[in-house]
Amino acid sequence: MRRTAFAALLLVPILAGCAPKGERREAICAIQALPARPGFDRFGAPPPGVEKLAQATAEVYGPGIAGGYGVRWWGPCGPSAKSTDMLLLGPAPWALTKGGPRADGHQVAYGTCYHRREADGWRTVACRINP
Image (cartoon, rainbow, N blue to C red; front, side):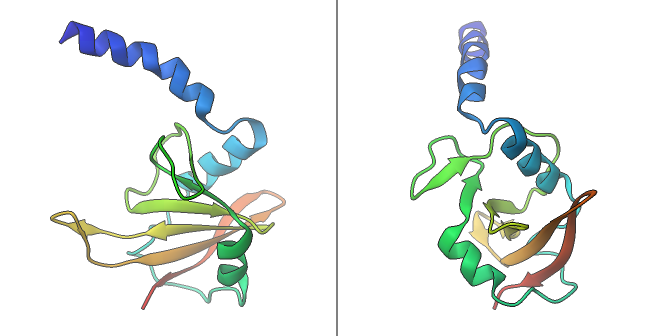
């Protein structure tokens, strides 16, 4: 047990080195701290064309450090919506969070929340449940 804990402590600095830095990390952590929960919340109107453009051009981040398919690790941040599976950062000034609740390991709903960077920080403008 002690060896496992010690090994985990040794990995923390290495993993933190793989996380986004500076302004990118601040943006990711600020978006994750927003109260909107993809797959649960439904309000506002999605901005026209942003989703399609984000899927084509955004930087994609997720919870896993292994990544794959162009998904980068979003790094350690404070509290985040437990339903968020991925975060699409871009095109400016937009960011999207995607995900939803699971039951017995299966996705039961999936949604997208749209966040816009404003002069005073990030603000959620809409969330929808995807069809």
